[in-house]
Image (cartoon, rainbow, N blue to C red; front, side):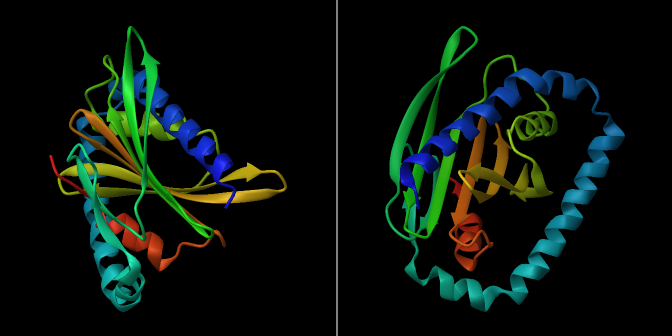
Length: 212
């Protein structure tokens, strides 16, 4: 893993997603009708049911992958997630309107994989509709989205994405989850050396839980 380059990419993606929340969500919110919202809820419920069936089929594989993972709780007591080691905390302050937003990142880089959880407050002035904010965040990721699906985290809606970013003559495949929960946006990102979605990535994603 080319650690410095991956770190820069992660920071850029977070900034882009936050920009999407603050700049595009208000317009998207005005276009969301009650019928569309209900349709999205139905789709999310169906998607969750399918996901649960898939998890049942793969439980033995994921259990094996989880053997090297331990539960990590961030120092602010915001979330827990399982990593195959101890992640490094990074904090970055980014201007947003007349204020700044503190973004927290907990990243673990290995020779053949990368796992990252990021969160920050939603910029003031963003639309109140979580679905609109999600669409705004996703639309600002500066790469072509190969796959996108609706997901949930308890009562909160989210998006799961797959996309590739160029790195020299190679492409990096990112697996990315985004959640809007209350006044915060949470993001999980994972990369494997082969570009494939590994059982370890599933272990990392499925372990994420909010404390607040």
